Image 1: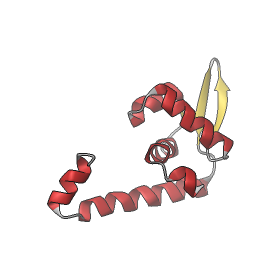
Image 2: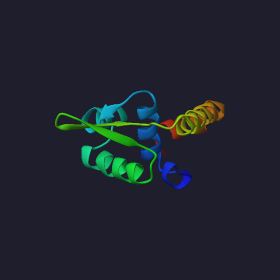
Image 3: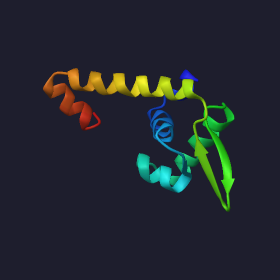
Image 4: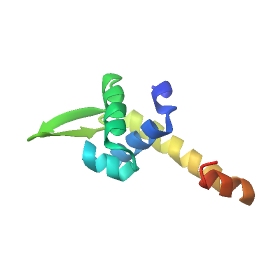
Length: 99
């Protein structure tokens, strides 16, 4: 689980799904990722049992079904957010710029 969530993209996807279910198109918009990349990440997360899906017409709706996963992801994102605010201003600006 931690290996999969070590990827910022997958952590972001699981965090977004912990806030509400979504199809892959809306999820890609929410996380700012390319549709094929988000789809591949979802496949890995689903294979590992971190994410589930159900069919709704022609769409697959993805969701996180495990409250423990939701807790881990929310705590992780909260800690990362808190740490980014504690960085000295010049380092924080570099971090926010993606450097």
